[in-house]
Amino acid sequence: MRVLVTSLKGGVGKTTTAVHLAAFLQLRAPTLLIDADPAEGALVWARQGAGLPFEVVGPEEARPRRFEHVVIDTAGHPRGKTLREYANKADLVVVPTSPGVLSLTSLQQFVQALEGLPFKALVTLVPPFPSLDGVRTLAHLKARKIPHFKHTIHRLAAYEKAVLAGTLVQNAPDPRAARAWEEYVLVGREMLK
Image 1 (tube, rainbow, N blue to C red):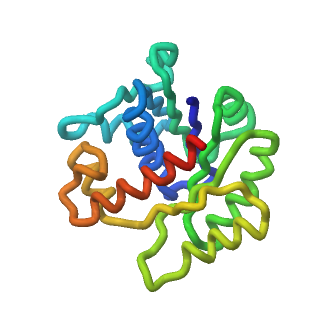
Image 2 (tube, rainbow, N blue to C red):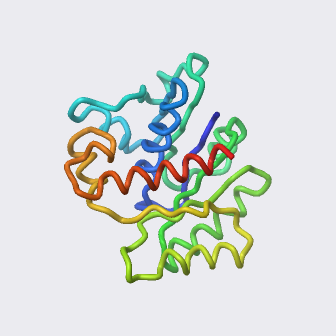
Image 3 (cartoon, helix red, strand yellow):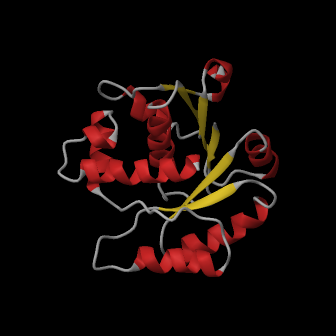
C-alpha cells in the first residue's frame, strides 16, 4: 500500500499520523516512511531514543521497491505539481484536519486540489470529552460529502512524550499511551478496508 499524508494547513498532526500509520502497516509487512517535509519532523523523531521500528528516509534516499508499504509525509501546503506527483503514486491520500473553522476551511480548499484522487480526511487533535468538537467535525464532513475516516484522533500529551522519547505513542511514558495507539489502529484498519 502507498499512503500519502498531506495537508494544506500545518499543525494538524500530519507527521504524527504518518509515523503511526507507518507503524500500523509495519505490523503487516516491511514499511518505509519517506519524510518529504523540509522540516524533517519524522527524521528527527526517528533519530531520538531507540528509534522507530521501520525505516525513515528523506526523498533522495528512498528505495521504495524494497518495501511492501510506503508512507509519504509531505511538506505542509504542497503545491500542484508536487502534490500530483506524490498523489498519483498513492493508493490513498490521508488529509489530517483538526476541529475548528480555520482547519475546516483549509480542508475545503484542499479538497478541490485533490479532485479525482482517492483521499480521506482524518479528524485529529480532538479535545477530550465533554467537548463535542470531534462529533461536530465528523457531521460537518458528512454534510459536505467529504470522504473521511469514521474514527478520530484525540489531542493527548502522549504524542509529544513519544517524540521526546523517540518511540511510538504506545511506548510513551503516559497513562493514555495505549488509548492513543488504539485510535491509530482503528484508523489503520479502516484504511485497509
